[in-house]
Image 1 (tube, rainbow, N blue to C red):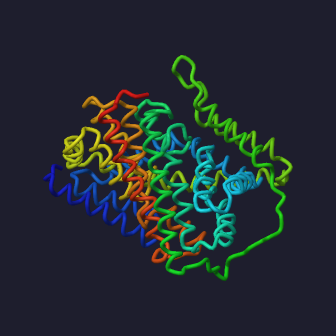
Image 2: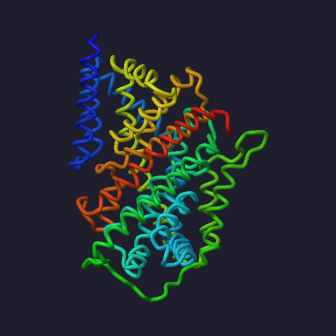
Image 3: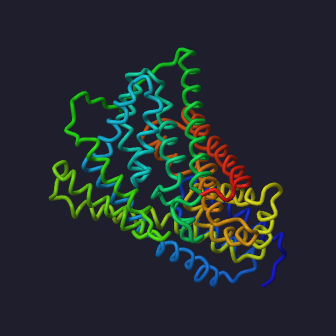
Length: 440
């Protein structure tokens, strides 16, 4: 059935709006995705059964097939770093090295290093939070800035910088045929700008707060343990992360020789070997089982969102949407950046947004002469901006569940560091790839 483009477009807007609303209300993502996909399909001139059976499930299964082992490897690495206290050891080493006078920046840097080594953002946040609590108390920094410090380190520069094994850097490579180092020079510059700008904003916000007489005030649930923990050596704990990063970026004749999943699993195995004395070997199978359960939940949540995008792709209005993005005013690559960050914002997920945007917009922009490497890095960086709106699952978990802060008290610092700062980084990437598209 053929429907007017405007009806299809309205259906997409309604579907996306309902998706955001219901996610923020805490409705199960699988129910939401199927419901919103049905709305989009009916208004988009599609047969509902065909849309759900083939378009929706096709997108769901394809994303699962292409990314399951990547999710599993990252979750396993994070779990191993968690149960051996390797992540905590690395964080404490970094914070001790930088000192209390740099307590603010030590928290995001510790998170960032863990992420660059393949540890998931959730594991990094949960590992660093107890340390952040101690550091903020000793430095008398208002407690409400802990979520901002954690989220800045975990969901901005470190998850999108060239070479990182995070899923936000992997998804574009799968669809565009690039490697993890794509857009190296411009990408590093853009991420460095994000790190410097975010650090400046964090220091400035805290300084302003302290001048108003604000201090660290512990909450009833805060537990401060001054006993010295039996932690592994931080440098030894770093070895598996370094091996992981090096192995997945080794090239021979221009081709990566070790698959990403294999490199991350190698880092996980090394963690098990090097930090074996700090874990209970009788619980290995239990930990593996928990890793698999966590992986299934994480990837299927993303699959549901990506599958929704697959339905959108088949609607009457979609070609017009792509055309509008491709012909967006300004530099050619700007449309790819805008499209990616808007979709990621709608999904409340950088990986979900990339899973939709990259296969849909990538080919169209490459046809306009933009290199795959430039698209990879720009879209990856752009995915880190509007994804951090209040309904983002990671933001909600860290702010409310982990840190026991409310959005009212803690979200504005989070906004400036995880939305505004990546938007600036995206603008920097667009400018660099427009004027210097041929840099490595």
